[in-house]
Image (cartoon, rainbow, N blue to C red; front, side):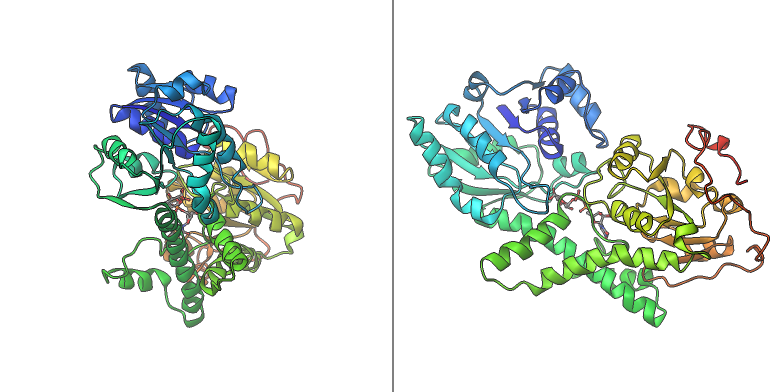
Length: 477
Ligand code: UGA
């Protein structure tokens, strides 16, 4: 089957590469010529595990190509997917990009082909989709075509797995009187061992939105409940584990922490609150999910501050993790950025580590006062306290006892509940985490006041600290 995927961002490129791997003939198009030429050279512009290999394989076997859109390409396609952005960059929706793509592509689509929208669309636009496409066809002097929605449910960092092994494939019909579109998409997804659910386009759009809103609700529930655990001295880990054995509840997306970030969950929760208000529907649950999530970031700063022995404006904080989740280099709505800004606004020196060099570079561009280093040990060196914001696996293999020797203070706020609180307190840390309560440092290890390592307030991030060899991290002065 000949497939064109318009838009080569996270969603479009994963779709193109996976469909090519399933044996389809796929062309990825994008309005950015730089992106097209680097993809043609097998250079993937962002980090997604396994994607670079999949793209290289598709290009090498001749099933995956990248080029600018053209009438010839669209005419030769059985299926044209649209996977372009629908965020306005300010927490809202924008449909001008998808509209511009439809205007460019729809006139050239064959009568027996199908246009499939993979982008997440605002409900109002879904309601107008059939009319928008039909009008473009009328103006081009052409007959109607099939138009479907096919929402994606892939997670960044696990997108290839999620695409290849979906729980379900949802097809939302905007226009498909002869079921040409549904039949074509059944062939497209023949390799997916999952139920194919066919429904009206609006239902499919709200099913996609509802899935993300429900996941966000689970996270905010765990976070709100973690506050009660803190108050009553219970452990959120034990509480959630016990709850998760109930098959009606399950354990996923109940990890308490600094809350959800990324380009999907926060945006869709905020937009649902706004959209509902604009159509006169009350959604207090979603408003609470949003509020709980955003409050988490300032709570982390407050609790971190209580772990530091000196005023924030004279302290140095190690920020461990910048990306909104591990295994991606995506910083969109990452809690780390809000937290770094809060700390810097209060005068703290913030030294951030993340394993993704591209994320470190972009974070430094966005927050010029933020210092970034290539090793967690370099961030910890000289720090009064540390905050874990992203649960990168590297954090589990740090020699925390050795790191403590290089720190000025001993506080650690585990914003993702990844470390063992008892082990950390035994190693000499004052450890705190959401729903885990404060664990005082083992007095046998903690250094008596006055004998702590002295570090200059203007302690620089040295070239060695930013170097590639963790062993070269200098000891605190
Ligand atoms: C989310 C959905 O999970 C996907 O199904 C959906 O396709 C995608 O949005 C989308 O709409 O495109 P994604 O944003 O990539 O995927 O990331 P998630 O794995 O959902 O994580 C979102 C945030 O929630 C992260 O910041 C993560 O750290 C946080 N999270 C997740 C928690 O705080 N606790 C948890 O228990 C789980």
